[in-house]
Image 1 (tube, protein in one colour):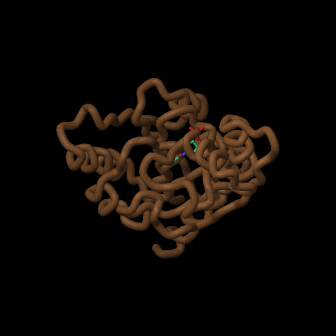
Image 2 (cartoon, rainbow, N blue to C red):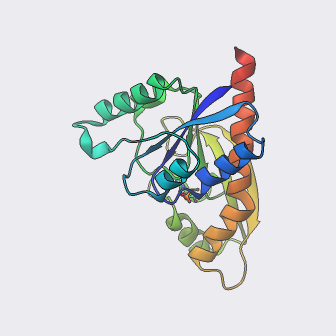
Image 3 (cartoon, rainbow, N blue to C red):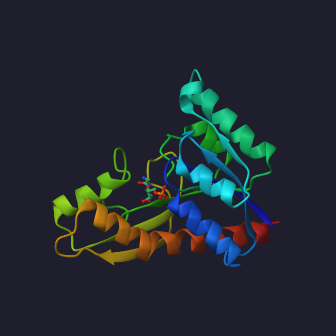
Length: 200
Ligand code: GAR
C-alpha cells in the first residue's frame, strides 16, 4: 500500500470523494492514512473522523517562520510514513522546504483549466468569479504536481465543464466539483500511487 495524506482547510468534499473512492476499491494501492487540516474548525476533520482516519491540525500561525512550519509539517507526514501528499482545498502556502521534502510527491486539485484562472489569489469561489467575469464558455478542473511555482507544476489530469446561462459562482463551483473534481482527484491519486508502488 502507498500511504497518502490529504491536506485540507475547509468543507472537504474532495476528501470525501477520496474516502468514497477508497471504500469502493477505486484508490488502487493508495491508502488514506492521515488528514491534516490548517484549520481546527474545518468540516473535513469530521469527515475524517467519520471514516476512522487519523487527523492532525497544523496551523501556520503556530510557527515563527514559514520554514519552521514547512519542516514541522513534513516531519508530521514523515513520522506517519506518508508517501504521497494530496492537497484537497488546502489554503495554507507550502514553502520550498516542504516541497523539497516531498519533491514529485505532492499533487493538488485546482478548480479551473490551468493555465487559466490560476496562480496567486485564485482559490475557491474566486476562481469561478473570475471565469464568469471573463465570460468563458468552458471551464473545468486540473490535478497537477506541486512545485515552487503556484499552480505551475506538471499537469496530471484535466476535465472540461460547460458554463451555463445564469450561472452564479456558487452554481458553477458545484458543477465543476460534481462533473470534474470529485472524479479527477481519486483517479489521479490512484494513478500516482500506482507509479510510486512500481518504483519500489
Ligand atoms: C475545491 O473546489 C478545490 O478545487 C479548491 O477549493 C475547493 C475546496 O473544496 N482549491 C483551490 O482553489 C486551490 N487553489 P472542498 O474543501 O469541498 O474539497
